[in-house]
Length: 263
Image (cartoon, rainbow, N blue to C red; front, side, top):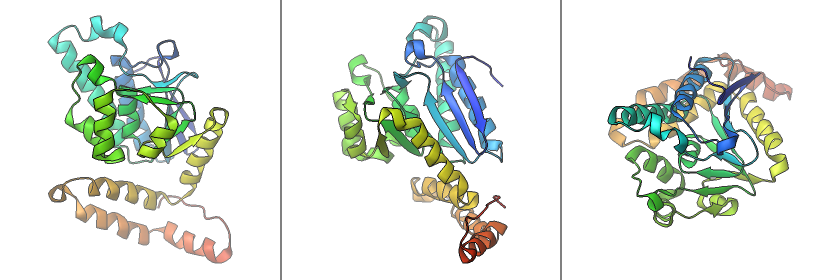
């Protein structure tokens, strides 16, 4: 596993937490951080004890603010270096987007450029009422590739995607909520408690049902010809054939909380 003090992984029961730990630079992301992101997310994805993953940034000022420009000279000065960097970024995004567990972006402060790209890879985005968002590509003549644009479009739709890119302006938490980018907006001092409780609620539900919904929603977003309908059907059948299905029915009749094992 890639190791760096700029990325922190924590496991607390069924909840995994990934922290981008570069607060001096508003959690800007370097090559080694993207590689560590992929390693950590792959570990969370394969750990059967982890049912939900929270992704956040260290400190009070930012979630993630995009690429670490101070590293450009050593990481992106050559064509080979640029290709290696882009591969690491793509792998990092994919490790979040393709994680079979529910993912929650816990956003405080600035969520800019690559930060919005990262948050777009998560299933749910919860931010503070003082969070700020932007994709400033048009102010820098930076091109955005298809996958990143599509992930944002799948969340906010074509019109808001165009507005975000065309204007390159910052927008606030309420605008993010109206656009559909932010699922929830909470006071700054309540964010961590709110997100932890939210994650615990998801973690207490039947893992087979939750994972099947995540997979099926992902398939719906694909072109019809690319959808794996057989796996969709198999995952639904697995829910009904599981011990958790029996546990859920018993708990309902006995008026108690179910205890799901994911089997």
